Amino acid sequence: MDETKLATLRSWIEESNQIVFFGGAGVSTESGIPDFRSADGLYNQRYAYPPETIISHTFYMKRPEIFFRFYREKMLFPEAKPNLVHEKLAKWEQEGKLLAVVTQNIDGLHQAAGSKRVYELHGSVHRNYCERCHAFYSLSDLLAMEDIPHCTCGGRIKPDVVLYEEGLDGDTVNGAVSAIRNADLLIVAGTSLSVYPAAAFLDEYRGTRLVLINKTETARDNIADLVFHEKLGEVFEKLP
Image (cartoon, rainbow, N blue to C red; front, side, top):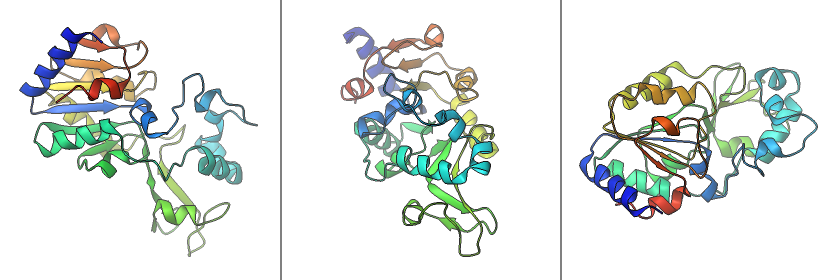
């Protein structure tokens, strides 16, 4: 690891009190949650239907029994625990250095680590709502149900996650954009930056300290002020 770049990042963190962290699947892989696009990720496994099809709104409506079987087997990890990255971000927030976390993940591990201001662009597996009466159900409630989950009123329960063909929540987007615009240091990590509109959020940053941390190159490496092609946990264990 480049010690000069690491020293620069450490000094930027020490000098900042409006840090925003923008994270993707790579933040949670060290907690045992597989990503989607790596060689052994979800999108490269074989199913009767492509995963992108199964987790689309159209498929959810037409074939809910297959959707929920896939969802339970491949997208829910109730035993996963926060890792060093989640914990360090929560510590920065408690110290008054971190303004917000913006995440593409749906696992809720940032909140489990203690982070309070988290913008979940793609929703959360921990929130589930009846499509008829809007009653709330937790993840454990959903796991206790079989097949297609239904509310006591008879309505179908839908996870509060953004499926393909669905738009992002407006309030969440506005909060994330506002935080990024006000950041004095933006750390983007564990994401290939290939998913839009989330990847376009980087364009809202107005500062001069944009840091990208990812094991492989991203499409936005050229606009970053500091780039690390390293495992996220190995970088974070060396930060204050």
